[in-house]
Length: 113
Image 1 (cartoon, helix red, strand yellow):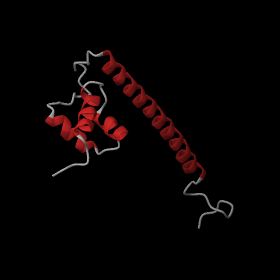
Image 2: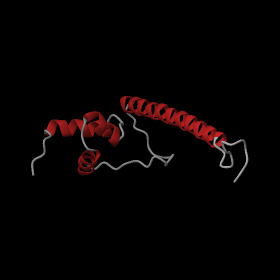
Image 3: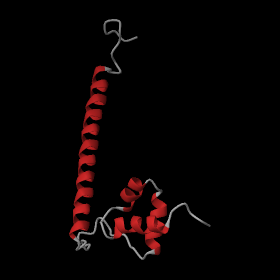
Image 4: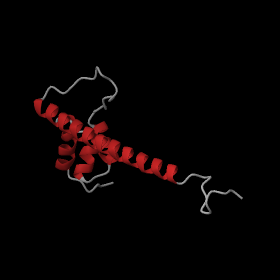
């Protein structure tokens, strides 16, 4: 079964993750390809994902890989901060709707029927 990717493209995609420190999902997104395809190539190359929650995980020694990892982490922080702000605004909006539309309020001057 032939794929639409050249050997050179595959090698460069794998190097983005193994040598430059990109997350597979980020590399795949930037290359315009499915995550699963890149992960499959990485597994064939012997790559094993680091557990993000593992504080003792080895950092890449290559300064370019470290710089790429720092850039990726900064992007993630920026995205998460933006998501947090959106959630804060949504919470405030829905809280204001809840207080202005009390279930006991009526349009006829307050009498309940």
